[in-house]
Length: 264
Ligand code: DGL
Image (cartoon, rainbow, N blue to C red; front, side, top):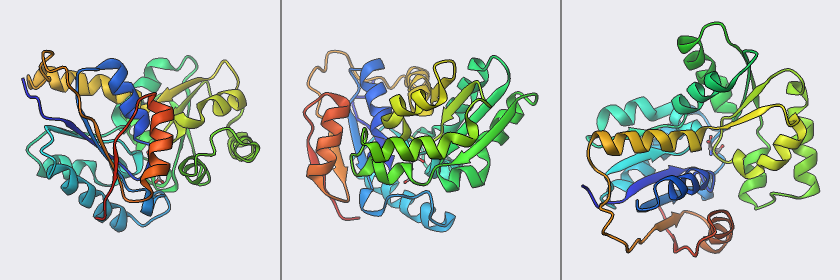
């Protein structure tokens, strides 16, 4: 047993999609979350900067005495997961491997689409991971740089958002049977994305998939939180506006949340 919280990090509100799944699948675990909305989006930034920023978030979480860190951001996972994992003595999970293996399981015709930030797509990491596991798959990737700013400004249903999603995803329409939402912000746009791609396309939420791995590791290392500890005190931190973050978080998690502004 280990009653310490699990630490989550993201460039902003996207990692909340992973937290929502955590609360659904592992409701007795406690969360500490840091979102760097002041510097989002990370996707168009150079790798070295993403690496620096991610380490700042990791170090912040370490000050909160977390038992595990989840890099709930594909972009940061693509750039620095291996390095963080190698340096820390607590388990560190990323979201890419779980998403890649779920896509392989789900595809019926071997045609997998991946959408993500410019850095995630440029790194080609999903294709590489999928290729190692299942070389016969055909992977098409597409960067969607306009999605994260829309989500960060809580424009989840607006007509502008619909227009941007439709125009951006157009090149993939009819070409894939499975689409990996390779950015943790994108599940917040899921209904519009599903509508654009059509009902037969299976959407993979890499963050949600990662929660299954969290559960496996908690069991493996025997660090589950005791079920007798009923009082949960989830804590959320943002580098930008706490009120805006709380609005998105409360809507998405269906939970009253404590959000504190921090400067890194
Ligand atoms: N949520 C992030 C991801 O999964 C990053 C978005 C960004 O800041 O560009 O890639």
